[in-house]
Length: 273
Image (cartoon, rainbow, N blue to C red):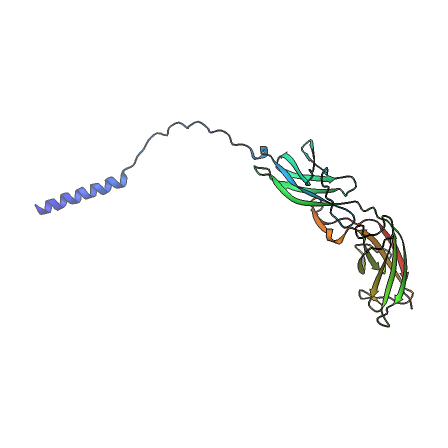
């Protein structure tokens, strides 16, 4: 009897295993539900490009009047233009995603154009503070110079330079800044030179200022000059050094030094015995 029970139990256990291994559920797929509302296209989303403009004079001070700078760009076939408010803030609203070339203009100041990649979306894009400097109207009228022996040793020389510039007269609030470049080549300029010297005015009260430029021995930046050699130089009126900055032009993929230089004057002197 016990043998039969064992056999029956084994059969029940085997049937249970077979049933659990082969059991499955099958059915018929129901109809698809209604489609949801279409999402909004990314290209249709719009937001603003905003920032601030700081205006600087050609002398030493930042202008407090920062309103009425024209800020303009183009979106497709549409030209957009706004003005800065009294704080220098501007807002170019309702812009789709894309690359925008934004122009900043005001009479009496440099014009600057920058390229901005705008992703649109729900948030406005802040492009920081942009500095625009007053157009450099100062002119270099003349330069008188002498190359003289240094009072400190028997070898070195110095250039005693007097520069006459256009008005207004030089004061603490109408200072001028000048960069001077030297070379053995007549093609001297701000990109081709042996040595550069930075100078600025003080409270002269006139339109003439003096600069004394010392050279080490008979060399200008390791280039030796012999008696009778011509030393070429070029002077540029430049904005205050504290205003120096730069911006990246994505049209040329170059970093552009800013502010730009103003009037320039070419000159030369003969290296003495």
